[in-house]
Image 1 (tube, rainbow, N blue to C red):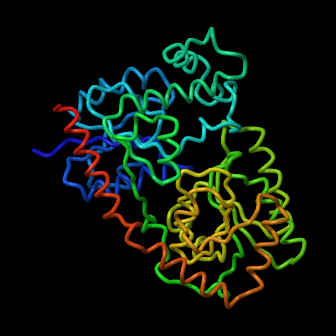
Image 2: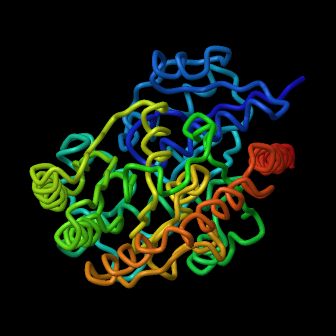
Image 3: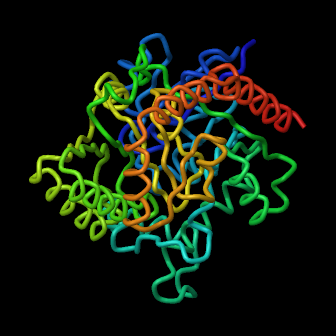
Length: 395
């Protein structure tokens, strides 16, 4: 009898978790399990018409999910849950394979949202019930509630998981640093570029209409403000410069988002910047395929999926040093310091060397097609984690 595995697929749009969730569903279709996807039924049935899909609408950050997910899974006779983030309910009777992309909420100096924005996004009463369930709020200093809530979810995720997966060596080291006892159940989960957003043919950089592209939800750690200021410098130096940003506002960071949208508006008014959000796979593939450089200016990344997607489409990756993007790109990442002037200078230097760009573009695409970035590698890691989780339950 096949193991009945459920994937929490509620996140389907606008951020990296949603993209990774889809990759997990694709990879799990190659594993010998009975797969159930739960989340927004109509959306999931369009993406995976052959899969068993069950509607499940409990908000991710809610007492309905904390207390209700286990009952829901039991009604479906699920043997193992794949939980693709730290905020999926940790309280399930069936064993969990938990995927932790990074530990950025736990790091010193991280710019986190405050509880007012969390409550505005998920509902005041609902969030207060979650806080009551997970925290002793009476002992929390003012301004620390959001950080404590993140940590409570992480602590439970690590404690309750039968198997843990993470997506980069950097994230692996960070998780073990914060949770030394997790080392024995933590393994690597390689990711791959979604075939749906990889252009079939590779155009030379000189034949591409966009000088630069950036793909990510608007969050402080994604560093869009610095990047947009750098792009503005590029355009002021060379009025032929053209760029595209693909991303959506985050209700968790309204002030930051407002600043990003202001700079986007200025770029669009100048005629040099495109902005897209909520676009389909074909459109995203066309934008990647039209861009010479993929800019990943993040100050912290669990993996850096846009870097891999860009490379798969022949983009040259420009990123800040010291993040997991270095693991993804290997020797083919171009580093810039975290300032508009440095990023602008790096882009201008690259764009002035068409011959070098041709070589880097081809090398980037070859790197993205390497054996470590394949559906088969992801499926193998998931299969191993499911087996470990199932053994843990039997034990």
